[in-house]
Length: 197
Image (cartoon, rainbow, N blue to C red; front, top):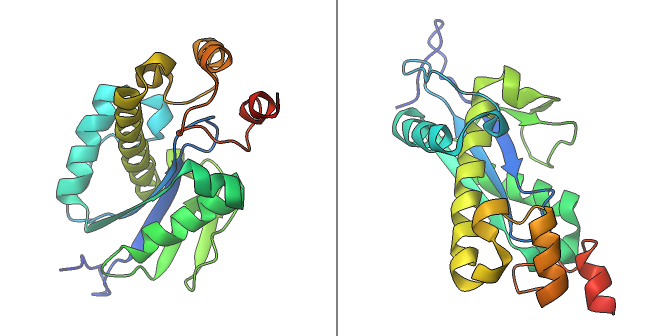
């Protein structure tokens, strides 16, 4: 049952954020979260400022106490077809569509609003100032990290368990040595430079 504001109106503010815009490999993941004001969760913040263990703990708390959570994944091949911005906005729309009840207002981290048939407010740095966006940031990051561990099981030589697809020196070295695998985004430099050789 939806939480209520003091006036009796159901609280349906959703926070939306993504994980994985910058990596050379793996999906972009978006999450949408409607928090329950009756069950506040301490420690919600930008997922990048938290340890992996703390993110996992908070993701469990969010799953248990939020009114609802939506998750969406757009894989590397679709990122290549759409471009990373459009893939991210698509993932955000898909995550919001998963929410039941549907929100009446959506707060999105950043300055790009997904094309939703709902009122949307963008907040630069929103994952640090809006608890619902902070929750979405954590859920998206935890889910994406788990997906990258799956990729590591399939292609352990790239070290996806350590860098999660980001362009670290170790990842770039493996990419040069081995070439791209199915997890890699062919439209991203330096991956596309290797495929053009």
